[in-house]
Image (cartoon, rainbow, N blue to C red):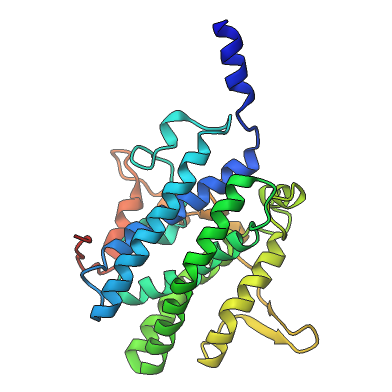
Length: 289
């Protein structure tokens, strides 16, 4: 009897490595964004920005909390890696490995990365995988205010000119390539599998085009120069520069560390990733109360 029960329970689990991998990346990115946002609840440059940061922190962590439980339903799941409190894998963008250097990093993450993830969720609103379909519709609805916040702050910082504008542009550029790579190359096996199974309604290149349609009107109007051009015939924005796929980790869906960080190790064998902390001037931030 117990054997029959165990067999029944095993049958209910989903065997879909591609979907499991992308859900893991979505959950980890949402969790990491929420944690980075949290430090700015008391450190934003204006009261209304701090209030927005607190609300957006709750939204992002809430999105992560709705995604992590889905991982338990897959045969690919490691029981020790489905709870964000004990999870050691990091399938979020490398940009989120460390604290934001300033408010402009918050704005860039909100404008570029969060919008990219929302582009994916929008493509899953008619998903054949019901749990993702339900969550995607709710997330897309909640992200509308996030997009308004991002657009407003990008415009505000860019129009300030001088060092303020330069700092914003630097933040956008640090995140630009990795965000565009997150959708994967056109032949990305995970994303292609999701497309052919009806889990999302677009291939990687189409997802990138939809994403550019969202962000480029703002960047273009502010004359922020990025390697994208508008095609009058198709009325679409198109990348005119290849992405750095040689530095992309398709499993973790994040940029690989530079070679000197991967190969140059101290005598005690510990990782050189910690040295990245010394390359930036981090200002301590307070967590949300």
